[in-house]
Amino acid sequence: PSASDPEVLPKLGLENRPYVICVGRIEHAKGALGLVDFWRTLKSRSATDHRLVLMGSPGIEIGSDDDVLVASEVSDQAKWSLLPNAGFLISPSALESFSLVLFEAWAAGIPVLVNANCETTRSHVAEAEGGLWYRNYPEFEVAVERLTANGAIRDRMATKGKRYTEANYGWDKLISRFMEFCEHVA
Image 1 (cartoon, one colour):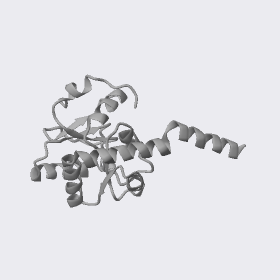
Image 2 (tube, rainbow, N blue to C red; image 1 turned 120 degrees about the horizontal axis):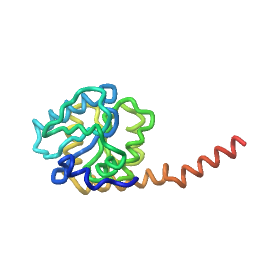
Image 3 (cartoon, rainbow, N blue to C red; image 1 turned 30 degrees about the vertical axis):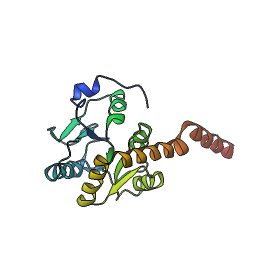
Image 4 (cartoon, rainbow, N blue to C red; image 1 turned 60 degrees about the horizontal axis):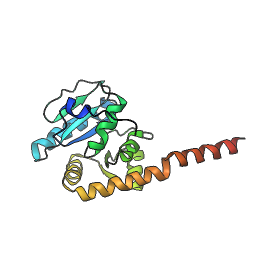
């Protein structure tokens, strides 16, 4: 994590309300519309007081309201202020080849909820034991309820995700892999 900005939470009205976060391009192909639809359905059926924060560059129009906040013009510092204070990260995309934001969430100390139709993110979550996944709305609702209601499970997943990130993608591991690659090429 890089430096954070302490003014971000008050500026976005998030200092006194729990929230979950989705970081990345806000567009249909990345699952943003489906996520917003699922979130609004959840809010109509559930007593959760969490707000969904979509942080990223919007390619589609999604309006902010009491349940969904679109934060489109935010810095990297803002991201590092928002991530550790979120209950968890949601990655709704079914089309990811790696998903750096999962590892950023784990590095920030929060678990993740991913779209099970994305083999890459689902595999990382399963290996890390750092979150949950969903295939449809009923599974989404159960996963969100579990992550918002059970702090012990959420903390255990966050810890496992952070451990997985450090063990597999920490600087020491990356430098070692790069050096092995260079030696192999030479």
